[in-house]
Image (tube, rainbow, N blue to C red; front, side):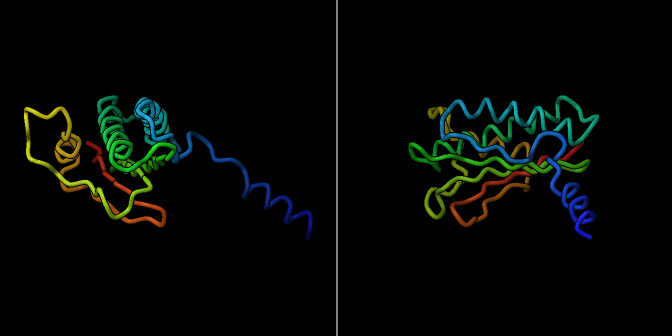
Length: 149
């Protein structure tokens, strides 16, 4: 009986195959590039045959979410967490930051004078009706789902 348990436990504890679904990032501007690279590795692995255009759309959405989380949801020394889930129908991107109640994302009117504030406009265009904000135990999660074409 002990031998059987050891065999079963080794199988259950094997490391996952392929890129992991979670990436922990420093709350710094350089994290946007790491996010794009993470998406470009994760999505094609978990959804074989997906188009490069689709991968780049998911990368743009993830990058916008991370940039907003760093800009509005962190303070020096904080980190953000990116969580991906992909299948043949859609890819869900979640970005967790430590700020919960204040500074929740909200769309702003289009302005040609500001050089910021376009992230949610991009989300609305790429993920119409498929993004939102949830409270999580240590902050909030802003999520978006990119539909497969």
